[in-house]
Image (cartoon, rainbow over all chains, first blue to last red):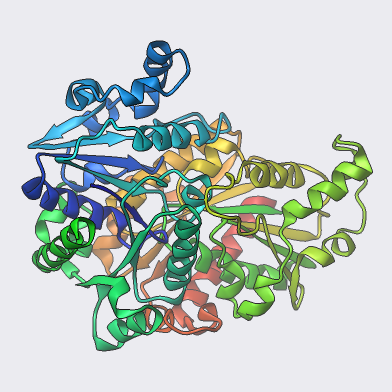
Length: 255
Length: 255
């Protein structure tokens, strides 16, 4: 199962992706949680220490190895090798979850992240990932990953929304662009919901079966956001809501 | 005066940029407010109707015109022509503010925004802008615009922070990358501050003279974010704080 998490900046993509990775760890043999945002913070969201994250080799560094093995073609991707063995060098393990990042930090003014996005796209499109595993991509804010087509081979795109007009507008745009890419399933998650009015606001903009669930606003997450540590552990409401979303997700993709 | 507004997704870059544009309109003859985020919402933040925004030609469309006039070189940029006349076709006026956008919406999977960023960079580096005008760029979330160097010729980069570890980490990375670009002045604005603890948290991470000011958390802005209309008009506290920040900014750049 390959999942991408998308949406406007600040809506809670990383919190949703990190929590979902933990839940998928119970339903799948392996979970690959990939931070596809150059401004990466997925691994930090589950409490992996900063120093360990700093030393994590980005996936794009695999490109040379792949080019060598396949002489530039995509042959490597169809070998269906032992993924975990290959990715060991490019990931931080946490139980049966492996955290990976698309790209590293570059110097100011040195380059875009096109090469990184294009390599991740190739990697996702390959048969590298076995059927018992789940792959979850935490995308960068906004829409450029969609015009680039980075996540075009996922089974489902989840779009996180908060109750604001801007975030709904972005979500509608993401839906349109994801459809351009041929992604068949696009579902929405309403986050930071404080009351019925905010829930209604989101429901007004989408069909009932487009919405996978709602997550209440959680003061604990806001309070803990100044500290280091596993922010996603703290939110009781978050976990309860995400558990329902996880179940619906399994039905959506398997059904 | 050329200003860029940067920071992690969701910290309030667009709110700060829109408010600052309105304040700069009082201190400068012309203000060019440029939305440099493909997922654009700067014009909407001051209440420009969606239909008008949809019809706005992106700046990148000027590229062909420029290429024609200068046969591919940068000659056009040094002509110092009547900017307002040239930009009329690519902007929406609001008093002496003109709203522009870097790029338009593309199809999913069609392209990156490298061409748009590179053209905006060239445009900003030219002498197109006269001394009596202010140009304010609302950058995309995260760090890619910095590794691309889109805003390298601004006089000052403002980095918006909210009281969270992730947003502080991004701000520190922005500072480092902006220094790589040779941007001399990099200042921070603390946004969504609810109490002393949150203010202290931000102060702990930066030197006192690096912080241009603080903006209190404003429930009205949150409440109004579900509606269309000029969100930035509603925040009394926002305007008061931004007025002080505007004054400090003028001192910083002129002094």
